[in-house]
Image 1 (cartoon, rainbow, N blue to C red):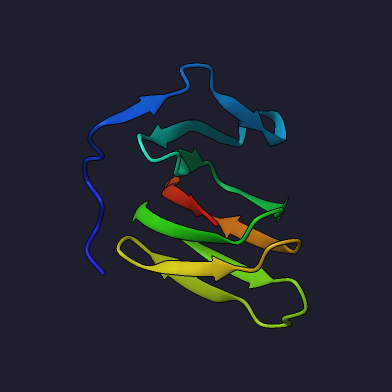
Image 2 (image 1 turned 90 degrees about the vertical axis):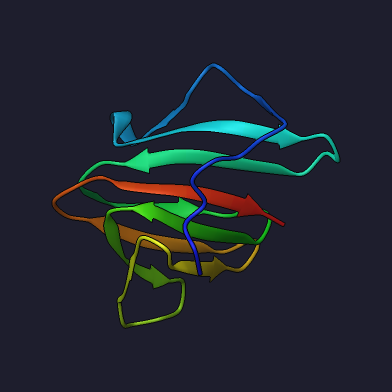
Length: 107
């Protein structure tokens, strides 16, 4: 998978979504067809995210370890790699060292 470096023809929510005392910061983006995504960064931490809709997390820079709900093993993902998270679920993510930059594709 190639890394998404630029997203064109979108509307951006200028107020940031700030989670976990600033350890995760993202901005929502919306395409003309109504598709929504978020672009963000996770600073070094171990966090748990809950999902409503299914998500695809695309790594843009840095790396992380992920454990999906119900799994016992952690898997490592870096730039150019992605992982799927089912809807109405959760995942643990661990970022060590440099921040993990991502695009979250909803639905």
